[in-house]
Length: 174
Image 1 (cartoon, rainbow, N blue to C red):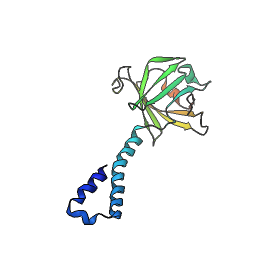
Image 2: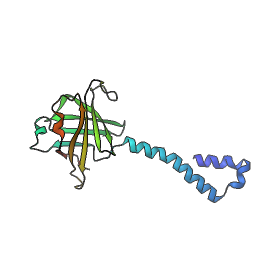
Image 3: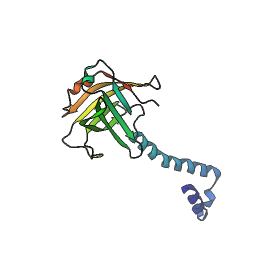
């Protein structure tokens, strides 16, 4: 639409002699790149890889399974919310809902505690937990993930180092 308006405005100026098919094509390509590039960059930084978001179930026989049985990582496409929770059985563990951010280059997820009413503003005195994720996507409908402990601040649910080397099975299929 912008190119269409620019074309008609240029026809009413002295630059009409420069309007050729080749120049119009070049202008359209440059205009498309200017419009599309910010959208692609924003998408890359906002939307997490699909394999990260899942309902991760702790594989049996690991020490952490005595503390939590599931870790839910959700991305809401409508509002760009990144939230999740730790569960024991079928119940969310009180005080252990979180927002998260994923670093694609390091393959690290940082979980930050939030209260139910705090969607975008986590408690400043709450906990944070950083884990490196190794996600296996070779079996299309059954992702598996191994977490590795990186760091934590004020994480009091249990020993956060129990996340090191833990394997999880994804419960949501594509």
